Amino acid sequence: MRKKIIAGNWKMNKTPAEAVQLAESLKGSVNSGKADVIFCVPAIDIIPVAKALEGTNIAVGGQNMYFEDSGAFTGEISAKMLLDAGAKYVIIGHSERRQFFAETDETVNKKVLKAIESGIIPIICVGESLTQREQGITVDLVRLQTKIALKDVSAADAANVVIAYEPIWAIGTGKTATSEQAQEVCKAIRDVVGEIYDKNVSEKIRVQYGGSVNAANAAELFAMPDIDGGLVGGASLKAEFEKIVNY
Ligand code: PGA
Image (cartoon, rainbow, N blue to C red; front, side):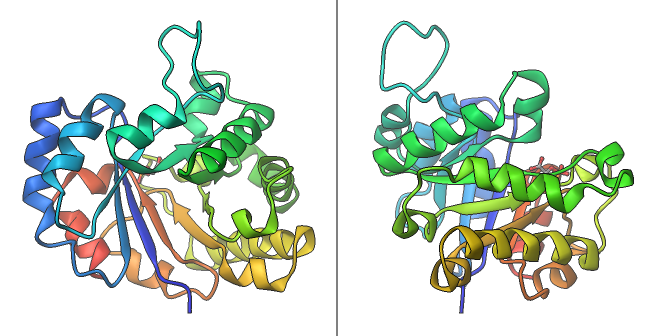
């Protein structure tokens, strides 16, 4: 049985002081340990939030990193910096980074490799636009994104990564994929992982759904056989996150 994994993606919200407040207000109610729970916070919030969560089962994650260890890369942060600050996970290749910050499948792969080498678990985001869905290429596209993201990742490491299927048309729009649509693509991701590696890896890897997950739809989505939890944006900044984690 795969343990569910539910991550809040706080995006560019909350100053360090506000982030500590939110973490403090949520930590008691999302800490049952039944699912892995992660707060993916802005980089500058990682240290104070990690401190606020000490003694709980809740992990902290970053939302991006660069694929080099150090050097003349103004504005970037490395995997080692994230780790040292207290992050255990990092979101890689979120569609907002692909859209606004020129992230490509190739940079996603480099970041995934560097995260793994550094001891951080990547949460790799894949997903199609509305046009791509209407063109009927969703599964082909997501398979390709998954294959490139995992290029040169060993089977042992692949079993530990998390893949988040996030249809772009469902992010922040209130338009959730139906549980059947989400299941179809999450299964396709698991199948391609099985083709690259083997059944052992495909049965271990955790695949999340993300895109307008809320307290009303979480239980149905997470009950699908190939959906191992969610990557939650808007609803992770509210008390509602408690209902999602304890669905
Ligand atoms: P949303 O965002 O839950 O607000 O749709 C999800 C995400 O972007 O990870």
